[in-house]
Length: 130
View (cartoon, rainbow, N blue to C red):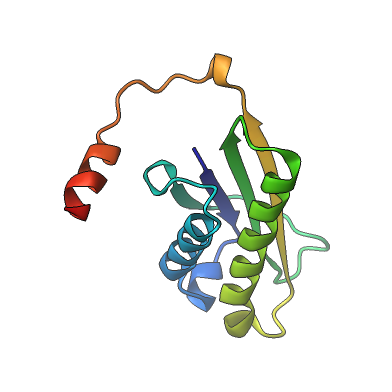
């Protein structure tokens, strides 16, 4: 259950294609082999309110990846490295010299406090694969 949320600065979508960025992140997660396609969710949110550094025209993308428990530290690290590399590769060409920071935090979802009994995505993926 890899769920990636990214919050980004106002106007970043004017500088780069954020739908393509989300797709690139999804593909990077799937390519690790440690993130089942049916569990991947990538969503982005523009910051409605922000104050960055000295108030200049700065941009950011703050990513939080939540993973279901059961992956060892090496696997989580490999996923984080692959995701960060893909995100950077997707953003760097469009942003060039724009003052920008990209960050990623990986968190574990504690199974005992997670509820998810209604999902038809896996069935839809199986039907699509046929």
